[in-house]
Amino acid sequence: MLKNMLRMAVVLLSLGILTGHWGTDISCAADKQDALNSKAAQTGEGERAVDPHAAHVRFHFQDLEMDFVFGSLILGATVNHGCEIGEAFYTAMNIKDGDAASWQEEWIKTARLVETRGELSLAGGHTVSARDQLQRASYYYRAALISMLPHDHRFKETALKSRTLLKKAGKLFNPQLEYVEIPFAGTVLPGYFRKAAPGKTPVKTLIMIGGAETFAEDLFFYIAPQAFDRGYNFLTVDLPGQGLLPLEGKFFRPDIHVPIKAVVDYALGRPDVDPPGLAVYGYSSGGGFVPQAAMHDQRIKAVAMNNCVVDAHAGVAKMAVATATPDVVKAWSSFKLGTNQGIAWRFGVKMDNLPGLVEANKGFRFDPAKVTAPSLILVANGEYGSPEIKRQTKLCIEGLPNLRKRLVITPAAEGASSHCIMENRNLMSQELFDWLDEVFK
Image (cartoon, rainbow, N blue to C red; front, side):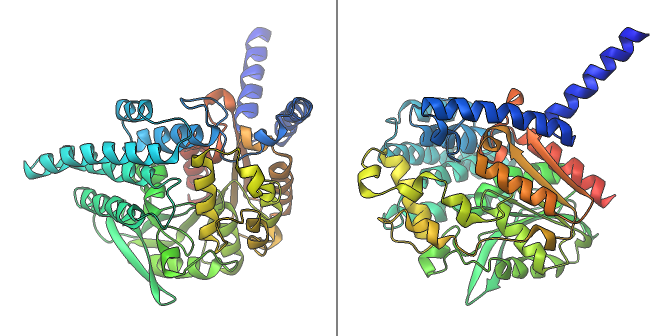
């Protein structure tokens, strides 16, 4: 009897540590990470530990930026039909490590091959095969855009090719994945909506908001199928600063809640969206955009952040771009340089002035005390090792007034340690949707 009780105690304690639901165990995990950070600082590895684009395990490439994108963004999308393992590793095998041009060329090659297969299946009436192939081709074209600069003649056409193929694949879903354009400030916010089931019955809805280098297609392949499986409508768009909108002069803006309001207006204008079941989830910089929107819009009934960005200015000041002078970036790979220059462009910062991103992020903040909706904070174990992320997480969880709040630190032991938990989307979705189900039951 005593042995059984001891076993049960060990199981419960382990579960609490892994999920991060128990505050005391979060503190213990934080203490262990503090020790690791101290050791990293002594060995000169501290800066690498706080880099949001560094993978916490090596997937294929020596270049940390390229390896993170490959392992988390691309391989992570396999579960959502955005990638095939064999295709991805064959492509990676032909890419010169750290070289932006090589990366772009090889992903476009793979995208074209998969697109051709999809079109052949579509012409033959094989709709399931066509849908799956066209989805992957769409995301491979999207992958080619990473580190591609906006003045590259291929940039716009590659982005539009990705969009076109996902729209074509979307027509083969049941219910269909709808391409939508939400009017805003003299332009449109392009994106996708898919209802959970046929008909006009209003159901719970998840709006997904991305970060500083996001296209709406990323967010579809990040989480949309998990939403469908759980009976949630799914909506995502490009906000100003995202997708192709900077080509129209629409850059990130500190009052990001204003365009998000237009997205909420659109969602609640649909008969198939249930207003009491409206949730908004933001990852990366979106972890600051979404709670800011909730401060201003009580129609948002649940907020999820991955991770929470209380003050983007303070966070960016701790990143490598803050000291990325021309002399410093000489040591960077062309892939890392191009990726960061692309982010600068999205904020309206000159691409040869990466430190300007610190100033550009002033005003991108929210007050946790004014976010009154139930709130979830997800943070990957590796990111929680950053003192700044830990500080902002503490500010947020302690400041949120609604008692229906939860902090989850996902464990490295389950391959959930990198930025936005992109390398374990099943675990991420389990934590998110199980919590939302509890909030909306």
